[in-house]
Image (cartoon, rainbow, N blue to C red):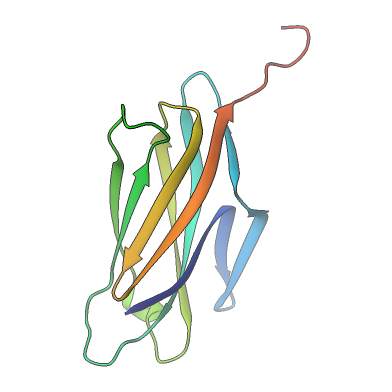
Length: 128
């Protein structure tokens, strides 16, 4: 498998064998007091002759060296790795302990893609 692209979105679905992304592509995320972040990782794939590896590894690097990176691993369904460009998406739910610029390094097969995400606290509504 060749990883040809990746991005973060609010939501994604497969509709009539096509990728349907809603809510747009994320580059910022506001977390509440629980520091919980929920988003979807979308990967674009292509087959690689002779390769059966379908693992996608994600390393979420925090903005400071004080915190350890968060590591996740996903398996791309076989149907998503075809002769033609394919796609897969994975819901991610993690606690992000620090504000600032996180970098998600997404790797799979022969490709690696860096996705920066700025994490900030959710603004408190007026009157609270």
